[in-house]
Amino acid sequence: MASWWQPGQLLFVGFEGTSVPPDLARLLGQGRIGGVILFGRNIEGPAQLRGLVRALHEAAPPDVPLLVAIDQEGGRVQRLKAPWTVWPPMRALGRRDEPTTTGAVAEALARELSDLGIGLDFAPVVDVDTNPANPVIGDRSFASQAGRVARHAAAFITAMQAAGVAACAKHFPGHGDTRSDSHFELPRLPHDLDRLREIELVPFAAAAKAGVASVMSAHVLFEALDRKRPATLSPPVMQLLRGELAYDGVVFSDDLEMKAVADHFTPEQRVRWSLEAGLDALLVCSKADLRDESLRLLEHLPDSLIETALRRVVALKQQYAPRHRDRVLGPPKPKAAPGLVADLFAAPEALRTPEPEVVGPPYEEHEALARRIKEDR
Image 1 (tube, rainbow, N blue to C red):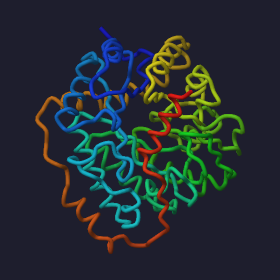
Image 2: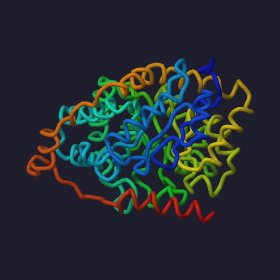
Image 3: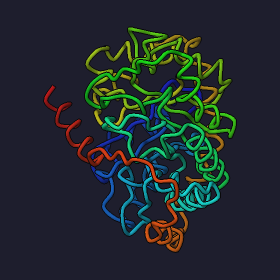
């Protein structure tokens, strides 16, 4: 019998292809992987995706169900495209500034994911988009005002989780005022702590108060607290979340393959220092060799370093994983809310309080370039 209390439950992984690779199926069957994240490269269409998610759930031991995750933010970061609902960017919701509408979108989005057996959405982005030169956030953010981001983040989180899908507030402590993309280099956040409390931390405080199931760290250097390690690996930065914001839910790393950390820290440093900083779950989104190395490292860490993280991850999975394992075995449901989406796209007059748009290159371009860079290393 597999156990919830295996170190590998702290590892969430991606994979190549549109079916479950045999090596991943073996690890899932042993209960040595906590979750799987899906990308566009894994998705061909509705029948294939339902079969894939069913196969993932069936590969995991019935007493240790798998949590399947996805980045389904809306706008340029949504892995599910037509015939699934194509959601507008969160900036459209922030401009409309009706939290009830944001909640309705999150509820409909969650129902669509839940029907597919997906129990965790790495959304919403709660970064405050204050830097027009930022290449990676832009219209993924609700707004350039902290209060507006906080309102919509809370509405999104509350509605999504009420519909049975775990949300994830990202990217702590804030990626909105950087000038570089952590897929490719290590960004720096140049502010003092007072500014961070006034702007960047406000939406995360609202997310914590709303009971968000998880938070994702940023591979960003916050020099006021730590000049050497990015937030993902930094105890003083993560203490803001655990201490000042009193957050006791699951904290995920961003992808540990991203160049912001991969170019500066060894696999052992990335794994150990993440947990020492206060993180709970580690994302390895592509490479099987880093997945296997990370698993080996986790399985050799002392129990004292992983027991609190395991407690949090197990609690998250016990709440959200079993229902989605069962859900994907049933018949598919119709598209979530076509009328709502049509209204959001077709009613520009409803987008009140205009603010400058910041639109970076399509995320698929980031992902493709990042993959080429990693393959060339």
